[in-house]
Image 1 (cartoon, helix red, strand yellow):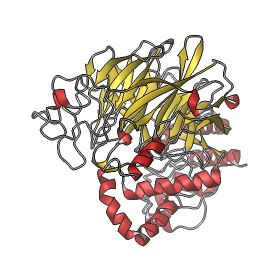
Image 2 (tube, helix red, strand yellow):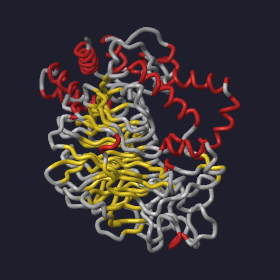
Image 3 (cartoon, rainbow, N blue to C red):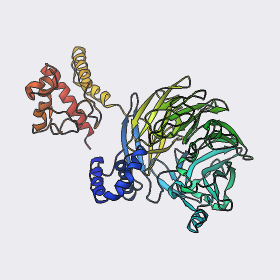
Image 4 (cartoon, rainbow, N blue to C red):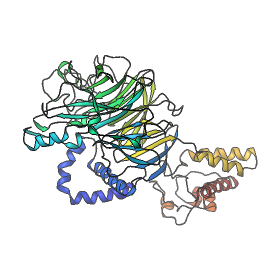
Length: 569
């Protein structure tokens, strides 16, 4: 995504900062590496977030994203600096908008053009009482990372003749000194005007709480809210219940000597953790659909009721799971394709790396991608419909192509930002909420591709079908290595904007010495000469033999320069 400063500039600033703060960096680096995210990358995200939020709040930028078989248009909206990062969720509402709940419980209405805060107070989560009890020493040596004690997701669920605004979060119960995952709701009209809402903390109704209420761990991190799960979804056409995921709060396999098949929090009977649950909106009753999940942060449902859930593993073992009927058990922490961050295997009973008799994932990611969201593709584009988009913290999203309930491949699509949640808007766009406070709206591109535009220019120049065939043949050969898309210099310098560009000036890393040291800019004449006879124009180039036809070479060069003129403001 477009950044205020280039990634290279930010990295250089970060390196200087790291030298200045070497002691702190040394203390943090091992933990960060074990989390599969480098210290440099995490600091870069923070620097980018603050620069964008303070200097670009409310701004929109547009970009083209290239994928294997689909060209996408993306609009990025920068959220204001008061938005809390690294958690929360979004849901689609009317008129192509999304409603956003951030980590601290603030609500925003976001469209591709506007951002506005909504006058909704989040439900009471016990945070103030928890702070007071910690400060009073009532919880012994326990510590709490408060940025992980957070609101996890939002859903506008159909509920009979009205809708219910639902939020999931970690809740502290001061009287019992324990915590739960909690689901609360507030009744709204189908056609609610979000900017007119005014909701207080006391207006919410608790719909459901997990059992048992978990005691904080007595030493170290007491409430590992980073692994709360908490994602919400509803089957299309349903109006009486919702699906809710719960994580294991880093308690899945924390106890040595445990038979995880029966005793682990995410596996044993009587526990609501490490689950996918079906919750009644009428009476809050809970039906378990699946267990054996570590940190299920992605959830979506097909119209036929098939449930797709991502599970954020440890070092490897991230999963995309399919639930077609109640009673699924995906086996964590008894089995996993991953390992602990310290290198030790996950599970017990000699089944490391396999799944035994437990349900297999529809697709597994090894190494880790850190999945954070899941979105069923339906009505987006025929090329993608039926697939599952998996959001991830690894700077990418993944298109998992699904056949008969199994993932055949996962196409990585680079975004350059950490994806927190996704939703399909009412006008058919994918909304992506990122950890550095952006909302990205993605849709199939309606503009002609760069290749289509070049072909149109060539057709106008060709005098007959024979000439056009010669042009197409040569351009197809060129396109084997040279992209026509902006900044795509992977195999060779992009031809996008080549006319008027300084020779040897792109980020392509394998220029010949002759091109790297040549002065001047590419214009119609120089392009024509190089296309026709590369080794004559630039001795030592790896370009090959060239077109060897001056007329065809000149027409290709002319067409490339006409594209530049068409793109000029």
